[in-house]
Amino acid sequence: MPYITIDQDKCKGCLLCVGVCPKGVISSASTLNPAGVKPVKPDKFKGCTGCLRCVLMCPECCIEVYK
Image 1 (cartoon, rainbow, N blue to C red):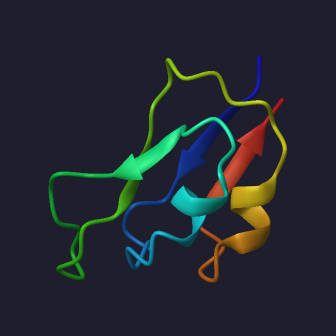
Image 2: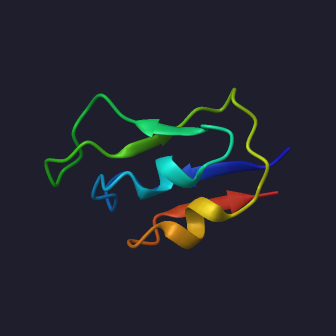
């Protein structure tokens, strides 16, 4: 089953990946990263399909998909 990892230190919290995820796997975290923004986090129980939409949308290249 595919899954994603997110480098929360690089994430600037733009939430572009949240809007393109067809399964709603990505959401905003409740804590701040070192840059002082709320990064995104994956929900491991939602079932990533490995579509790579989040990877293509992320301007900071902080998302990786593993199949």
